[in-house]
Image (cartoon, rainbow, N blue to C red; front, side, top):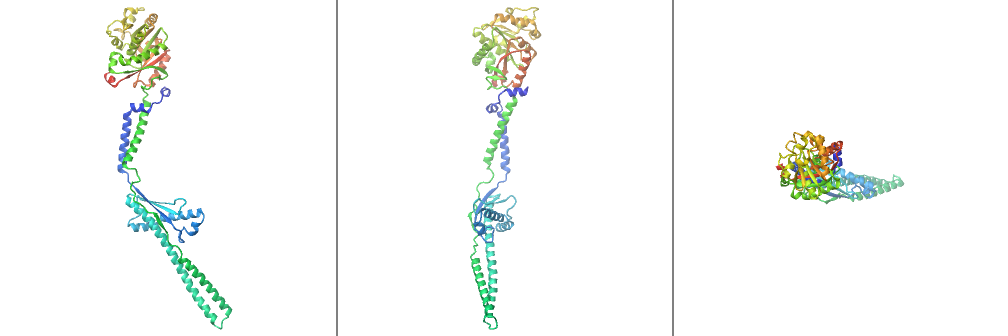
Length: 496
């Protein structure tokens, strides 16, 4: 039944949820702000600086002239290898010596990337201070270039040293061959060939030495030196608080919406349909209106209610007016509706049939001890309504009588049914103010009437209650004509 009730009603709007559960939303925002303050005060700030290095091809490095001029795959492999060199222990040790501290230390991060389609390496360093971040990124860039240059110079010097040794050895061999060629005891043809061989070898070695001396040792340059970061990587405190407030607001909206959905109350925005029942009118009632019996500002609403009743209730008609639970609004609505029907020149009688409520007598200014319905029901046979009826505002009023609470069981007897049947002969509408639907007194009276006008208290009656009541009334064979909603002002609730 609960699922049926909730499934048949519209989902609540966010504005309605906020209006009724704004405190939950405020508490969510405040809680989120407290979490944001705690996070902002404890989070460790980090800073990141980056430096871009443009690499030159070197013979003693992965990025050789052949790799730079080769295929894209070769160049990519060479540059990725160079990137690994930047983060190698050798470079880290050199940087640590330069900065006179362990780099990278705990909490510091070195990242090396190769921008696509370039011969550059981007070095990014993260530390707990702007200065440390800048120094780290710049030191790694410079030490990496120094390492490449050192390797290139060492390679060139080693090559030249090897070539010098070969030149010295071949020079000695050439001198020996020339001496042999000048010796008359040696065969001149062999000596001549030896001289030519060593001469050609010396020429080749000199050429290689010249090429080695010409090898480039420029490792590249720092294209973009590291700059000191201004802002930390983490959000600043105002932004953290703003994000926390937004998240808190979203959570608050969700909580308010869920609570509104779970609360299941009939709300003021349900002006046309409640649980399948047409809503004829909505009454906004303050304390003063309730004391006067729904006058002044509710007149127009009762005129709309009159239209709904006249359009749906075929004359002559006995209309019970009842609410859910113990609520005096039912008899007040019944009295005011009867007055509006009488103003339209209908023949109208209104009967107070709630043993526990004297609101109808209060509305019309009738004394509580005035004879009424209880006196008619106490007679052995059908009573004459004329003996207890009171004329008020163009209609006939049958008060409850002083002993209706004692004679409440008579409401289920034949006398009450005959009384209503007799009144239908003389009146277009017999409006009966009943006790709450679902109570024994209320269901007894409602089952006797032709139809029921259900009075629904907004912000107090739930859709589940309405669904349960309609199911019970359906079992009793009661036709529910429609509903009228009543909303009390805050001040009225305090007085009641």
